Structures are given as C-alpha cells and as structure tokens.
Amino acid sequence: MIVLHNARLIDGNGGEPVSDAVVQIDGGKIAYAGPASGAPQIDEAKQPVKVDVEGNTICPGFFDVHVHLALPGTKGSPIMAAMVPESYRHFQLIDRLKATVEAGVTTVRDMMGVDVGVRDAVAHGLIEGPRLLVADKMLSQTGGHADFHLPSGVDGTGILGGKLVDTVDEARIEARELLREGVDHIKVASSGGVSSPSDDPDWLGAREELVAALVEEAHNYGGRPVAAHAIGLAGITSAVKAGVRSIEHGYALTDELRKEMVERGQFLVPTLLETLSADTATPQAVAKGEKWHAIAQESIRASVQAGIKIALGTDAGLVPDHGTNLQEMGLLVKFGGMTSLQAITAGTRTSAELCGLADTLGTLEAGKIADVVVVKGDPSLDAGLLGDNDNILLVLKEGKAKSNRGAFAV
Ligand SMILES: [Zn+2]
Image 1 (cartoon, rainbow, N blue to C red):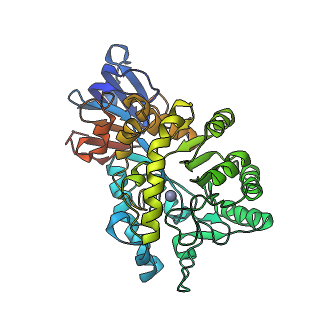
Image 2 (image 1 turned 90 degrees about the vertical axis):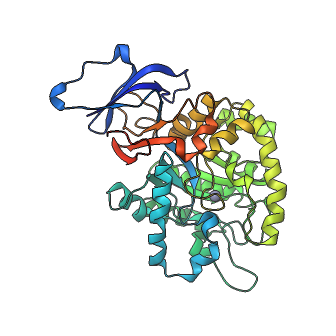
Image 3 (image 1 turned 120 degrees about the vertical axis):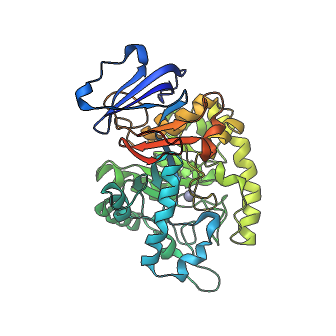
C-alpha cells in the first residue's frame, strides 16, 4: 500500500484541483483520491509506504493516442528500418518505450508498425514501457498514404507497416486478419499524407465504402474502433461519414463536419507536436509539411470551440522524439485555445474514453488502476510544465514506480 500526501490533486475529471489531497493506492488500484480531510483511516497493519510529495501535483497517468514506436523520431531516418534485420528493430523499441513511460505517459495507442507481441511483452513485464494498444498495420489504397513504393522501385510499404487494400472485399479480409491477430484498433488512411511519396493530403485516400467496411468488420468482430488518418477535406469527409471513432490530424475540418463529428460522438486527435518540426524525409515532404502544418495550427481552435472531443496524440516517432509527448499539452493551449485544465483532461479522461478504457483509467478515482504521475508545480495553471520531463517527478504504472526523478521514498 502506498499513500501519497501533501499533494495538490488533479483527478482528470476537469474540475479545479483539490489542495491538501491524499491518494491511497492498494494492490495497484486507487483506494482513495481526494481531500485529506475525507481520507479513510489507513490500515497500519498493511505497513503503508507514506510519501510526502511536498506540495506538488498528482495527476492520472497520461495518454498519447497517436505514436509510432517503430519509427526513430530525430534519432534516425525511416530508411534505416530497411538497413537492419527485423529482429534488431525490436531491440530499438526498448529505449523508446522507456523514454515514453518516464515522460509520464502510461498508455499509448500505436498507429502502425508495432504488433500485439510487443503490446503483450510490455503487459507481461518482459520489457518496461507504457501500456500499449496497437494497430499493427496502416491500411490505404494503392498509391495512398500507406504505399511506400518509391520511384526507384524500392518498396518500403511492408517494412514500415503499410498494407494496401483497393476493394471492399480486400478491406474486409485485411481487417479480419488484423482482428484475428488481436489488434486493438484498425488504422486506415482516408486522405493522402505529408510523408508518403506519391500522394497529397488534399487527395482522397481510402474512399468511404472502404472505410465503412472496416468500421463494420471492426465493430462485428470484437467491437474495435477505427482510427482514420485524415488531413484534407476529401479524406476527412470519407472518414466522418463512414463512422470512424477518431479522426487523426483533421486539419481541413469545416464547421459542417465539426458539427457532424460532435453529433456522431467522434474524437479528434490534432497531433500538433508533429506540426512544429519539418518532416525532412524528402523535399516533397518538406513542402507539403510547410503548407499543412500552418493549416493545422490555425484550424484546431475552431475544432475545440465546436465541442469535438479532443484526445492527446503527437505522432511521436514520425518526427517528434519519443518521450517528448507531453509537449502537446502546451500546444493544445497555445493553438487550440484550451485552458490548461482542459488540455490535461484531453490527455487523461478523454483519451481514455477514446481508447475504450475509461472504466479503468484516465481519472483518479477509487477502484481504478493506479497509473499516477506526480508533477512539479501546478500544471492546472500552466499545462506547458508537463512538456519538460524535469517536472515529471514520479511515474507509477499499476502502482509500481517506473520513474522517480523526485527521489521519493516509494
Ligand atoms: Zn501517424
């Protein structure tokens, strides 16, 4: 049993922080989170570990719902993935997983290139890392965002985790194969992309009937959600109408589609961190990035104001480095016009909802899993604090310390 006391509590529900709070953890679960005055008597026979967090802030473990652990961020280039045996790439995940959980991110949704074996290896304690939800493959049509056939004839599609489906039947079969493997969600690209070699974000990717077939299969075989990479208007329209759970990026959203997303209960994952740095893979990608990153930063405010459910995602690995995930918090405030508390709710409760994990994660309430982060200072006044890992003093995942920069006696 662990008792964190002398704390400010942000429970993830969006309310004002509770001062002089206590969080009691028992058997990896939250036993109590709230004001010290209302805390139940501790059973001293359980020899609880009492940790004075020195007036700092306790938050729920954070989510990043759009990462690519198979990609190196600025520490390499995607082409290097083709230069090593596949087994080597598994070992490259070790540092990326560790950096992510040490940044306070205890749950991630991987969007391409990591399979259920990696998820389960973390879940079973073979390697340290955040809890994973995985897509394994990203699907698109031939010539779409998942297609990495290069003009030279080299084909990087499979190496990066792409899979091409052009007919409704192919989409259904591929979805069922992924669901048979046990993936947590299906990832499809319904628009072109910045990094892909032969299309443009303005172009339609997987058309509505393909996306709708994926939504239907994923729903019927395990109730899994579909996440759509959708940057331009044609691709966003296809994905929204087909009934996906989340729009990833969503830069060219119109007010009409924003309204429809709210009505359908769809989530938006703005990945603003990815828009801060140039995708330097090719000159074409640089040019596409310059245009679309400006649109992304301008359009997010209207999406927030429209009341779309916003979850926190970064595209970590594509360009942003693993472990820089919570820099997205400050950007949701800066570009999205969110309050700091709203940004924190996006990265906790709303992201847990998107992942279908709101019953067990995302807020600090009795009975939930004890993913807990102690943050230096008061991030409810400045969510940007969360982007500096020096402020992430303690990370507990299921009640166990994964990082302890604050040198607390846990
Ligand atoms: Zn991505």
